[in-house]
Amino acid sequence: MNDLQKARDALLFIPRLVALTGRLADDPEVPGREKAILVAGLAYVISPVDVIPDIIPVLGQIDDLYLLALILLRFMNRVSEAKLRQHWKGPEDIVSVLRRATDVAVRVLPPRLRGLVERRVEAVESKEGSR
Image (cartoon, rainbow, N blue to C red; front, side, top):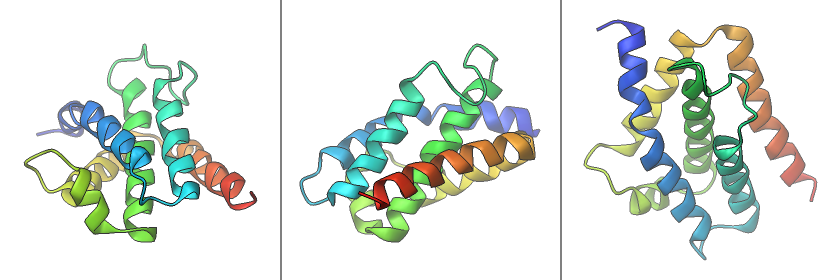
């Protein structure tokens, strides 16, 4: 299977990752700062203003997938893998899904575009850290 086909397959997880992010943001046990970062990630995915416009097939959604995966992996490392697993509603292992999503994005997105997405995550984290 080539990288583009792997990317298409990975895109099928976006709706479930959006739902997971929403459930985490709604959990009263999740710290406020983390909720703000999760909500900012959701806003990015919903927003028509992306690093790669969504009208470009596959690539237009890969940046959304990459951003959500980075935010959720960050959440897992900073808050709780158990909390991440608690809210995941899929039969797949969520950690494997997130790692696969980032692997696909790294292979498909040009380095400059990956850097833009990574900087967005860092900017949201910095903004929330200064509050």
